[in-house]
Image 1 (tube, helix red, strand yellow):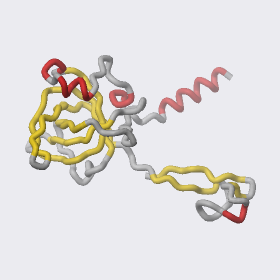
Image 2 (spheres, rainbow, N blue to C red):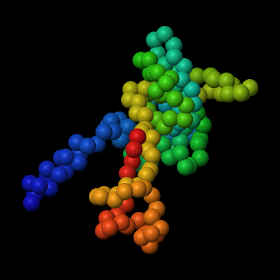
Image 3 (cartoon, rainbow, N blue to C red):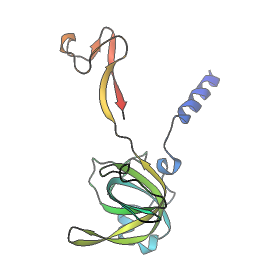
Length: 178
């Protein structure tokens, strides 16, 4: 029995696709509010922040991405149901295609806080924290739908079977699509 349990644990661990730097926060995790209050004292500190992409600027040797900051959950995914706390920039050494890194995409970045940069937001100039990114993770978009787990047909709510999502001895099971 122990042998099977170990095999199952190893298989489940192999299914995890999150990078370690995204899944685990740095030892001295600096919050966005701490960094805004004193950028100079946290220079070169490791951070893991996330949010929603606002803009992508590609230069000759790097890309700058502006992100609307949201707090992260335990897996490192932005909690967009919470209120945002501001904006930050991250710098990627390679080219980030704006067709892939589109506006409103959820993203988490791990890297080093290297300072701040000025950006115009409307008519106001803001100083935004700047991160040198080492790991970038775009979160997949899930579409929630239902399906039958055997020989059923159709999707969704079936009022002919008591209104409960149960059909010929089988349940509707939620399924995620990308």
